[in-house]
Image (cartoon, rainbow, N blue to C red; front, side, top):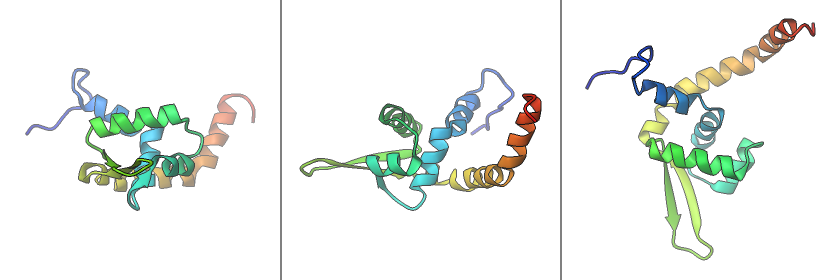
Amino acid sequence: MKNGDAFDPDCPTRLVLDRIGDKWSVLVVLSLREGPKRFTELRDMIGGVTPKVLTQTLRAMAADGLVTRKVFAEVPPRVEYTLTPLGHSLQEPIQAITDWAEQYVQDVMAARAVGDGRA
């Protein structure tokens, strides 16, 4: 199987980068790294995401093979989301980027303030 080329404008690699570069997808991967979560658990862990956007993100991630959605036949129905093996493979690179962002957030914000003329 041939690898993609992110610099080729016609390569679907760009679609993959869009998915894993989306902040909500990143936060879903980080939230599910410890195991399955229900929708409300994910929403509460992530914070700031609307139910509509979280639903759209989870559907897109499921379509991309990154998460699975399991419905339990209970009353009321219970639904859990879990990372697939493909989704688990994203944990290390996403954690590295998250660690970098948390370490350098103040530097980035200071540079942004200078660029905006606020510093």
